[in-house]
Image (tube, rainbow, N blue to C red; front, side):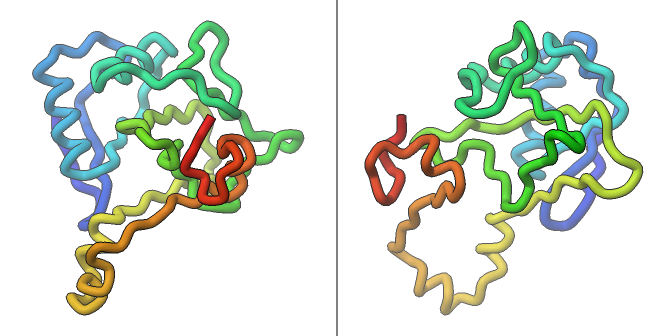
Length: 170
């Protein structure tokens, strides 16, 4: 296994791993360590099944219950299925946050793209740790002791139960 850093702020490619085969605990620990160091890891040219997807997810802990809005892969309720085509365009007008508005958000998300366009269709990633670290000391002092409410935007109506700030969820 080789980990190739992709940018100074976020992301690495993991080379030499075949996710369609069982992985031993030492390799899974290395993948976890790379994820912690780089926040996003990529495995190129993988041909996996929903079983492989769930095996990787299960190596990090208990998979999440089915997504409350999006459909799932038949027989695999914890594997969300996103299909985009002219009759079902992507809903990508805002930052996608993978349920981080929950009181206890998921540890990570595992995405597998089975069909990717030649140009465009890119998923962008952001490292908020690096963004905070890059702030001037004065702004960091101004932020000390402050709290924030995660605004779910369009998803608010699907999850909030009579709470203006969206803190009480279904």
